[in-house]
Image (tube, rainbow, N blue to C red; front, side):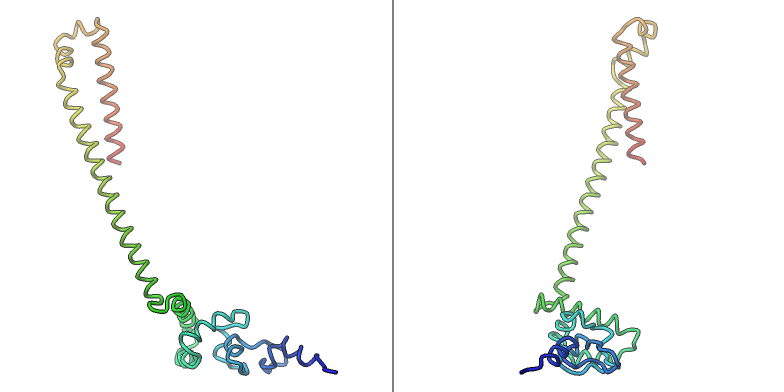
Length: 190
């Protein structure tokens, strides 16, 4: 009869390659993938935890475990976390795009930024043109309103203007147009 207890214990504790710390700490993802013992001072352990095996798998596939080990050994400890993050990002980009890697993603984003800058410049130019047209329109209308023949007649015949209903309509229309354009100038100048 086969005793399954030692086999199950090895499967649960990570194959017997756990750190020798009295407890059954699982090996880091790097040591688990490389099928080696995870030492107490393992350089991979702080950055490649056992519950994120894909993180080291992509880094190992692109850079190789020995190169990653050398890079981490050469860096000071406070820079290692950033280096691992950069390696993971580059490795994931290389897996997605083996030819260009993250350079392809950066280039694509740069093209999008350039396109958006050109669209923004066009939109700003259109806004300036619309403001110029509105200003020109308001200037043209205010000059034609002040030199209209009805206005000239109104100024010459002040006594008759109060009697005539069409004259009072003209004055009201003139005042409403003037107030409209004053509001418009205030809006565009703010």
